[in-house]
Length: 155
Image 1 (cartoon, rainbow, N blue to C red):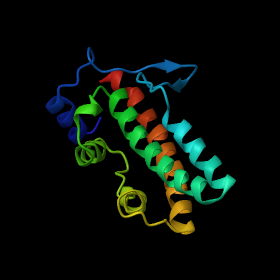
Image 2 (tube, rainbow, N blue to C red):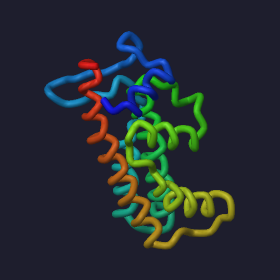
Image 3 (cartoon, helix red, strand yellow):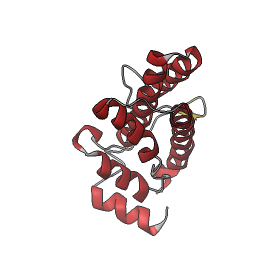
């Protein structure tokens, strides 16, 4: 474990006793599950996009954003943090400090979604496609990076 990561682990108070890690069948299973998983939002976003039409397109960008945010919460919960108590910027900062690809891309998903939700302006097809692609890439990136934390027990 890098010295920066060790310092962070000590600073936030993660110990072997309060850290959570589950390994099943050689793969990771987050110890925190949601009733609706990030991958469910991602699947729904893809289905909405494929369906086409105004309503489905609007739902696609919203579900893409939900997939990203819920994946951040799931990763933080898996690592022992109470993600419900953190603001989005703190979550991004924390994930970045733990070596995750920090989702600067969030702005490219949340901006068109916020414009949709608060100014009632329809996102472009390109923005919807980009949101969907970024959500899929981010979700997979988090899943892969969590694998590096399997070695935490050996510290």
